[in-house]
Length: 149
Image (cartoon, rainbow, N blue to C red; front, side, top):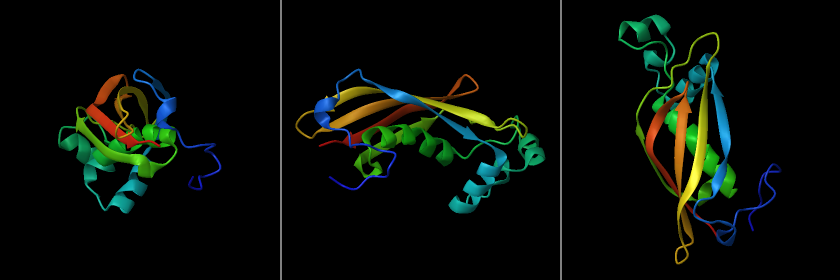
């Protein structure tokens, strides 16, 4: 077994998972400071992610989170659940709505997941994710496949 960070007690095994299992929900809070940090790390400095007047000028309701930030935040639910990010072997989403990030309150991305398939031959599980912000679905067709032992 690989060494895990202290916040993980074990790596999830294939035999401990069943189709229909719900993953513990996750809330990711995002504020303007986090968007600026992400812009620097990702080199995506598009003004719609930090400049409120510009975002509104181009027709957005406010500054919006980077799509890849939203996508990465959602898959954190699966990586935490399986105990090792390296076990996620496939991941894809369709962006349905932006995450609007108001200056004074920020935004919460609420993520839930359900095991939709489990293949005993490959020991892979498929998890369907649901991600919402302000009560609206922000990702569609969000599926992650993880390899378990």
